[in-house]
Every structure is written in C-alpha cells, then in structure tokens.
Length: 575
Ligand SMILES: Nc1ncnc2c1ncn2[C@@H]1O[C@H](COP(=O)(O)OP(=O)(O)OP(=O)(O)O)[C@@H](O)[C@H]1O
Image 1 (cartoon, rainbow, N blue to C red):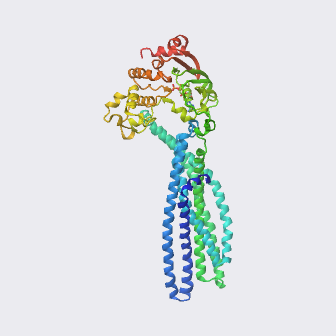
Image 2 (cartoon, protein in one colour):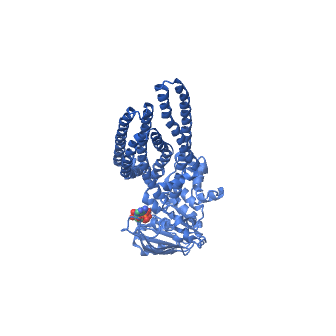
Image 3 (cartoon, rainbow, N blue to C red):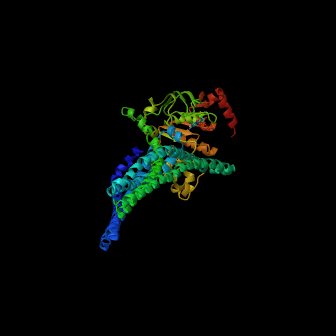
C-alpha cells in the first residue's frame, strides 16, 4: 500500500497541513479536562467563584480554536484525498491503455472496472480517513496518555498494562480480515462481469426470453458476494465489543485504584475526574483506531489489486530497450509469417495456429477463408502484435514485429474488425478517430470509398449527426461501412479487413470492393471473408483449416485443388 503513497507527493502540503490542524484540535480538546479540574478543585471545592469565571473564557477560546482547526483539517484532507484518487485513477487508466490484449484477457473487463472504481474509492476514502480520523485518534491516544501521566503516574500503570493486550488483538484481527476483504473484492468483480455481460447482450436476453436465467445467474454471484461480505463483517462486528470489554475493564480498574488514591489524599477529586475523562478519551480513540485498522486492511486488499495492474509492463516498455537502433518506419509493407504457431494463454493444450508460413508481398491482396473457429481472426491479430506468436516469427519488411514499437507498427496498419465498434460522438469524430485533423475532402473520400457517404448525407445533420446514447442508432451494415471509412482515411501501408462486410448487403459489398481496389493497389491487404465473392479477386487466397494452411492459390486454382474451397463456393452459388 505504501507504494501508492507516491501519488500524495504532489499534494504534500495539504497532506501535511491536515494532520497539523488535527493536532491543534486535539491539543485544544485535551486542555478541556484540565480546565474542568481547575474549576472543580479551585472553584467548586475551594469555593472560589473567581476561578470559575476566569477559567470559563479560556475553555470557550480553546473550543473555538479547536473548531476552526477541525474545519481546516477537513478541507485540506479532502483536497489531498480527492486529488490523490483522481491521479491514481488517471494513471491506472493510462496503464490499462498500454497493456497487451494478453494481459487484458487475463483480468477481464469486469475486474478492471471494479479496480478503476470501487478499489480506487476504497483507497481514496482511506487517505481521507488517515489524514482526519486516524490522525485524531493517534494524537488523542498519545496526548491523553501524556496528560494522564502528568496527573498521576501511578494510576497510569493501568494504561500501560492495557496497551500490549490491545495491540496483540488488533494484529490478529487484521491478519484475519485482509484475505477476507480480498475475497470480497473478487466476488464484486464477478458481480460486475455478469452485470456488464447482461447489459451488453440485453437484446439477446430479451429475444431468447432468458431474463429468468440471467436473474438466477446474477443472484448466484450476488449471494456469493453477500456471503463473502458477511464473513468479513462478522469479524468486524466482533472487533468492537471485544475491544470494548478490554477498555471498560480498564476504566473500572482506574476508578477502583483512583478511588483508593483519592481516599489516601494522593489524588484530588478534580484530578481524578480529569484522569477519568482522559482515560475515556484514550479508550474511545483506541476503539476508533481498531475500526480504522479494519478499513486499512480492506484498502490493502484494494491496493494490492491496483498495484497488480500498475506493476505490469506495458507493451511499449517491453520493447523499448531494443528500439534505439531500429527507428526506421515500415517502408514497403511486406508481411512474412515464418513457421508461426500460436496458443492463447491458459489454453496450452489447444494451439489455435500451427506452422503458418507465407509471405504477402507489398501491394499484394491475400484473401483468407475457412470455417468458423479455423483461426482466421487470430492469424491477422498477430500482425499488429495484439498477441505474440508462441513459436516462429512474424516480420514486416524483414523486421520481427516484436522489435517494432507497437505504436509505430499499428500506425501503419489499418484494421477493420469483424464487429464494428463506434464511439458516442458525431459521425465525423468516428471517421476521423485515427486522424482528427483530416480535411473535409479526405474524410468524404474515405466515406465514399466505404459506400457510406450517400447514407450519411441523408441524415438530418450529415457528418455532424450524433451517434450512440445521445443520437441516432445505425444499422449493422452502416456501422461496418463507417468503420471501413475510418480505416481507409489513414491510407495505411497494410490493410486488414476481418470479415467486415458480413452485415452489408451483397450489392453494397460489391460496390465497396470496387472502391477498395484503387486503395488496395498501394497497400498490402489481408481480407478475411465468409463469402467467396469477398475474396475471389485477391491475388492469392489462403484456405485455413483447424489452424493450418491447407491450400493457397488464386480463386480458379483453389476451385481445382481445395475441397473446402469448392464446397464453400458451391454452397454460396446464387447466394
Ligand atoms: N481471446 C481468446 N482466448 C482464448 N481462445 C480464443 C480467443 N479468441 C479466439 N479463441 C479461440 O481460438 C479459435 C480460433 O478463433 P478465431 O476467432 O481466430 O477463428 P475465426 O476463424 O476467425 O472464426 P470466425 O469465422 O467465427 O470469425 C477458436 O477456437 C476460439 O475459441
């Protein structure tokens, strides 16, 4: 958890001033029993009314200073903790952006969202707690002890006996609760994952009338979270009464021994009353500290989860060491796969790609066909280094991609994915996502090549039409055309189209293909297609079966040599 303290460095002044103000407030509070003892001893018992009227204003002034100091502490603690939380959230988000898909797959989006929200809030609240309440209780314990010792060192021995007992108790409960809180956050991850999946697929759930099943699934994860929370809460609930027993026992012991000392004339009644006030303050502060240790152990579980991500190496960091002497950009766009095999993390027994070996020459268009799950998307995802091959090498212009900075590599590759993803914002912002300073002319040219211009112009606000929650919803085919335009605008050296016209009607598909032809001449293209028509114009077509290349050639060659290709062509005739 201390590793995260660096985020407070920028706010060191508020972080230092908050406890200092708290110290002032505690000092003022500690003076009050002293003033009270003076009123009892010198005013009431000795019968000097003057002592009361001279002490009362001092009490009022101390209370006022304490009040101002308390407000100051809250203001500075809030400034420090809120800024701390915002900076931590920002850095965690940045780190997530830099992580490889391999790392992101490992955590899952539900867990990442919980870490970015719930876990950071836990730590942010802890910072506020440490700067205010924890500081108050710590100062109060130390101050009350000093004041109690100045009143009666003999009576204070009772306090000394109590401290190791309490410390041992707190250490034990913290040890027990840290893993319980970690388990609780994990269950919270699961609840978030189910919730996200449900919301993303709400149409499927409704169409299949599976709301009951989804409710059941949510109930299971929710009750898992409930059980984990109750388990932790039981320990927390035991904490306060057990500590109270120890503390109340100490008060009774102080009363008994204080009574004896008072009877012997070794302690005045006023001083005994002040002593009891100090010991009560001390005991309540200790009780508070115990509860805060629970919050600390909960925040520790959250800090561990945040550090787990912060300590991962980003993609850029992993290759940076080799970059200095490899600064030349991609010039030709030749892609070579050399005996490449690939297995997803956690699926060691199932290689998705086996010994893939081919070269796409600059300007060449290669089609890739195969049944669902053959490994087509996986194969192309190795080119922008979304994943690293398990065996073999992928090269661009003879440089192994592992040695090219991901940003440089991806800056030269235009990729249109199987599932078109658009962001909320205008159509213009979406098309210009990779090139925000593109001119109107460039944007329209890209939209025309993707057969998107005409439907955009029919919308009331044209390119300035808002998409998503605040605006219109587009059809699947229209979304695909916008995502093609987004890629074409970049005029990349390498273009990868991953079955990106599956939702486009056949007529528009053929129009898009025609427009793409001129662009494809200057780029190396890989086109994945379920429809033979989408790939038949390619210079060469790869047939992929269960992760292996089983045939490669032109459309006409494959019609003669590949059984699978023949079957696909036959089944799509007249389609
Ligand atoms: N992130 C992942 N983690 C683990 N396994 C995966 C992952 N993505 C895909 N797979 C597995 O890899 C295999 C190949 O999937 P891939 O998406 O590459 O096939 P595809 O040929 O593109 O299929 P489709 O035509 O349906 O798009 C499948 O068995 C799939 O279950």
